[in-house]
Length: 341
Image (cartoon, rainbow, N blue to C red; front, side, top):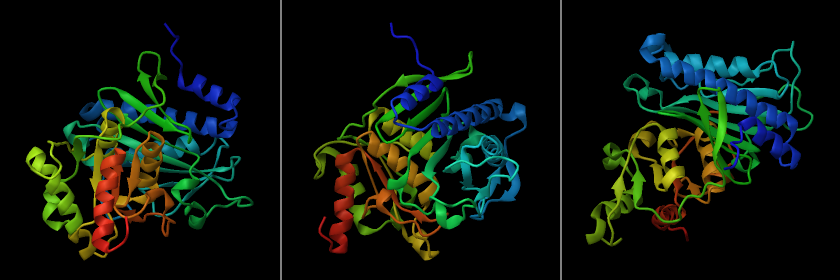
């Protein structure tokens, strides 16, 4: 039997193979350590006094949960002093967070959603942390918002942590996807899956059906065909799943295949919006992971990671998962636009 490999050993091996730098290795170690603290906080639930609203709003005007605030503070504190970051940005804050002058600065930028799916906290459903790592532009010592606005293709690492029955870290450096499970007895993340592959075909989809009446016509067409099952044009039945925690829904796809959609709809456009999910904190890192696992990720019209960001909190539609179904859904949108798919 092969001896279990810890996250730290895995990172050392990646560094020795010259696939990552020592600074990037340290960055991932620090993020993982912070996520272990978040796992402890989420695991205590009502016993830790962390449930319920914080009584404040984030930069998007959304009510914050206590654990949103706690998770954000944990990640900020953990990454402030190690010398591996030039700056970081959080979904919960309007502007990037500089590294205090008292500490050395590194060559990377970190973006994170500290607690994705926080609306599910109080009902004990899986939530998670999503993160993305970019290189700080050369010569920049005081990174500003513009320095973070790099396309998803520029990411050097991305990952997420699921706080569920077990705590899992899923990670990519751009050459495959690996999964680590937190061994709570020894306090270490242990490698449990390498080279994760999403099946090209699937019979399972995740979408919020309560918004169906607001969708664009090509989305109506696509989901209508899935719901028609074996009696419809697709000739087979599909199952629907929806957790409403992006981390949990995407992890199901990483584990057994499937597709996840948060399309543009009339409710969003009526408010002048361009999508629901954040490009920098959710769409780009998840797209990187899914593509590295052999899947696809688009806005319904174009590849997510090719987008040039225009704002730190920019929102986009998200279609990701098994390649074949994403191709069909994207083709329907391009056809409706009169664009060759």
